[in-house]
Each structure stands twice: as structure tokens, then as C-alpha cells.
Image (cartoon, rainbow, N blue to C red; front, side):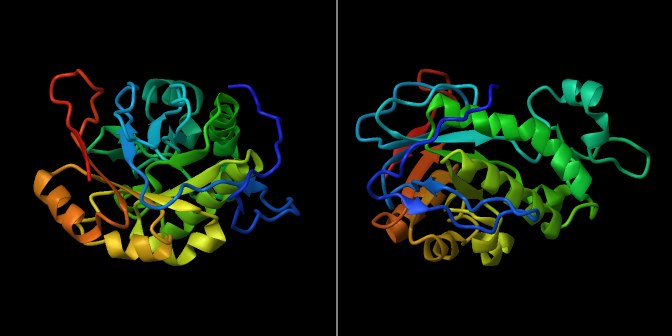
Length: 268
């Protein structure tokens, strides 16, 4: 996608983007607008559709257009090779994480190869690919970006560490802040203590009720947390405990669009 070079002044309610710029004398992050706490949210990764009445924020894939008049979060799979894993293998094979046999390390739950963020050189090379995706989110008119699979190091068979993830995330947040985009921490409680250094502004969290992490994220981000639960019992428990403070949604695990068989979408 084309590089977005447009700049705009901070709107009322905007805050300065947090986080330390990468080494090399880069300028401080520009103003971004994080979401308000406890606004009604819809998670639309499986396909965009008209938001239900009352929804004030949506997350959509970077290839979709933002929803007019709402707070829009742009989903970017920044740490794993999806979609088009074959293209990664053909064009950027050196940037896929490899096992001892030279085969790509795969996230077996989603059948996605992991990207190799183990060195500074590879992280910079990946930014030549992922960075323009973030620029595209800004050009399309999104308010924020959600870099997914921050926790991929947990599925790397020890080849990646949280330090590698934090270093790459810092590059992503700096790029996004330069484009006036807020940045969500996606899951990964282990990196909560580093959120300010990395530069995250809010959180998008899957199944925090199931894993008993909602309080940790709510406290860390002053309740600027979008929660997605995939089991009804967890959603019910979350609504009872955090319904007045966090933005809670129940979705089907494949996040199917409205009208598709198996689509589930509830809020509290």
C-alpha cells in the first residue's frame, strides 16, 4: 500500500503517543487518539458488515474499509505469515522462522508460519513489509492498529523470546504513532510491564475472562480494553464482573460476518 504522508493536528481528547522511539535518533511519536473506555465494540475480522445499533468501535482487517463515524481499529497480522504464506515462502523465505531441519515453524492452531524477529536486521527487513501495511491503515482512515500474534514467541519452540517480540513491537508502535495511529497490545500479559516502553495505548484481548486476565489489562490501560470472548459462559461471567468498565463482546471463534451460518455477536 502507498505510504501515507498526511499529517493532522491533534483533535480534542487526543493524547501524545507513548513509547520510546527505536535507537537512531528518531523523532518522538506524534499525537494519537486512543479509544474511550467501555464503548460498545464489534470484532469484524471475518468480514466487514454494517455495525449493529449502538456500536461505537469496530476492528476490521487491514484490507477492509473503516466504518464511517466509528472508532476504527485496523487488524494487521504482524508476527505470523497469513494470509499468503506461499508468497512469503517464495519471496521472503529468509524471514520465516525455521526449525533445526530448515522447515518453517508453524502455529498449529491456525496453520500459520511464524516470522523470524530474532535479530535486528530481520526485524528491520520485516518492517519494510509490515510498515507499509500500517501506513495503509492510516491512509484508509483508521484510528488505531491491532498488531496480532504478539505472543507468537510462545509457539516458537524456544527460538524466539519476549525480548524479540518487544523489540519488534516497539518498531511497529513507532511507525504507527508517526502515522497518528494508536496501537493496541494484543493479549500477552507477560508484556504488560513493558507496555510504556513499547508504546502501546490500549488493549485488544481475547478470552481474558476465561484466562483470568481481565483485571490485569483493565488496570494497566485504565479500562481502555476491548475484550472478545468465544464461550458463552465466559462472556456471561465477564459481563457480570466487568460489564460496567470494559468493552465486552461475544463472537464465534471464526468471527464470521453477519448473515453467515454460525455468526455469533453479542455485547453487554
